Structure formats: structure tokens, C-alpha cells
Length: 214
Image 1 (tube, rainbow, N blue to C red):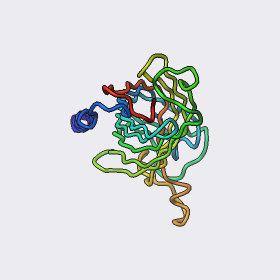
Image 2 (tube, one colour; image 1 turned 180 degrees about the horizontal axis):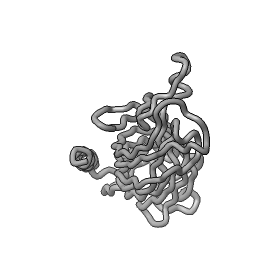
Image 3 (cartoon, helix red, strand yellow; image 1 turned 90 degrees about the vertical axis):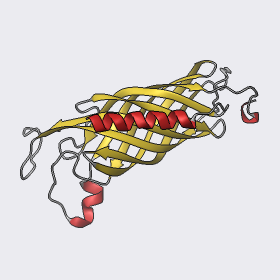
């Protein structure tokens, strides 16, 4: 646990170091719940939800596209329910902590900026990217994607909610290795983790406004 907290604090300092005052950059926090999907949960959303919190850094290319970097601390847990379905071999329960760092491309469906203009202060969006999760001494690559909505209630402040899914390339989150045909392992047996929650970001100030946002 101490190593995980130290890693998260290191990520905070990296974010702060990146965030020099520029009109295109946002920084903020995210809070919500995380949950797992795998052999013990084959698709139910918000299965055993656990706390999740982290930091968000966004670089806005224009009113439709942004690059985003985030780091978060998540808890994942699950248990085998005999009454739901049958799993061969040794089954049980698990509870783990996971630190996730990901890079995302954020694509707005509508024109959006944080100057609180009535026509540009709300938009749904989709996200797609790559990431790495630190779990029990190992780094697990994953592919995050999701949907969300964001709103600018006052200039430079953005609030949003998001549902993000992450497809991993491991079957070890739940400590249960299912019996499978090797050729189907990547598609059928690897575990997922997800985030559902809210975030608040602040547009960093600059003396002159970037031409893209004029």
C-alpha cells in the first residue's frame, strides 16, 4: 500500500510540473467508483463498486479534440457466486488496489470551450487511448475507451461525468485462470476494469487568449 501511495504522489508532482500556464491546458481531479469484469463478473456494470480518485491533465487542440493524461488510484474486488454459473477449478474472492496511468484522445460531438459561451458550454464526447496499470508489482497494459458529457458552468471551470472501460491483456486480476483454447485467450478470458464517476477541471490562465479560443 505504501508503495502505491508513493507512486500516486509522484504522479501528482509530474502533473504539476507539466502544467505551466497556457490557455490550452486544464488540470483537475476525478472521483468515482471502479469495478472489475472477468471470470467472476461476466458483464454486470458497477459490480462491487469501490472508491477511485485521481488527477486529470488535458491539452486542448481545438474545440473538438483534446489529448488527456490521467493517473488514478482504484480498488477492485470480486467473488465467485456458485448460484450464478459454474467455474471449474479453485475459485474464491479477491480485493486489490490498482494504480492506472493512461493517455486518451477526447473527441467532442459539439463545439466546446470554457469561455462560458451559450453555444459552446456543453458537449457529449468519446475517449480512446492506451494505458498501463500497476498491480501487485506488475505493469498491465490496457486499452481504455468510454463516453462522457461535460459542461462549463462558469468561465474556465469544467465539470463532467464519464464511464470508462479498460480492456487488459491479463487474466490474473481475479487470481483465477480459466480453462480455454489458446487461440481464444485474448478475446474471451482477459479481465477488464472500469471507472464511473465525475471530474472537475480548471483552465490555466494566460495573459493573452490563444487564437483557437477567440
